[in-house]
Amino acid sequence: MADITYKWHKSYTPWLFIFPTVLGLTVFRLIPIAWSFYLSFTDWNLLAKPTFIQLGNYKELLASEDFITILLNTLQFSVVYVIGSIVLGLALAVLINTKIKGISAFRAAIYLPVVTSAVAVGIVWNWILGPTYGIVNNLIEAIGITPPYWLGDPKLVLNTVASVQVWKMSGYYMIIFLAGLQNIPAETLESARVDGANHRQSFFGITLPMLSPTVFFVLTIAIIDSFKNFELIYSMTKGGPGNSSNTLVYDVYLNAFVYYRVGFASAIAYVLLIVVGLLTVANFYIRKHHTQPLD
Image (tube, rainbow, N blue to C red; front, side):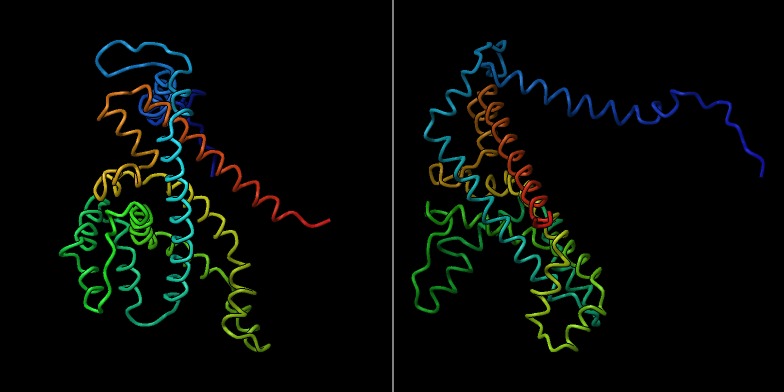
């Protein structure tokens, strides 16, 4: 077939096709990011003109005991969420990694909370964990044990909300782990069984090592996702009691749209960005170091 020359093609033609995406990225992402960075050095209440105060917001953050508490809450939420999501997601993937009739329905049921509104999930779990009419507390009382105040006890509330987030998102990680499990050659596992390895030995000796790239991917995604916890906290606890379930992302909302301290909220947002960035870089560094051959 003879070569066809597209005479209408110019050097700038590819840019015309990507221009809408670049425009949207610039207007709705890059400009707001740059503007919020500037605002983090200002005092602004959404009404008056921003007043430049240099590092005032960051100095106030570092000197605030409440901020340290909120930062520790955020890290605690992240640890519970990341560990819980990986363990539960992998366990569910192993359980449903089979070819039996109707297994697709189970997979869909486990994945359903992922696509359910986080606000709706928070409202339902608020009712389930309610101190008076909650199903969980009624079941605990039925066996003669005094139930805890899940969302009212400062020692329990953060882990409770994090556990609900794990329940909601574990189906997402299950699908990723399931894809990784199905890429493991069945012949390898069959050879291990012939050599006398039991299920536990096959899992820890073959399946888990071969699944390490998937685990690393899920770990990275879960770390980033663990800091996006606004909806559940807003619908379940409003950051309370006190600051016991308040996190950085929710504190950004409080300062920006409740206290009208937009500059201070922007500074918190950039601290959150730094925390997520450092954890992600550390994750990649550990992964790279782990895969390097020993001398």
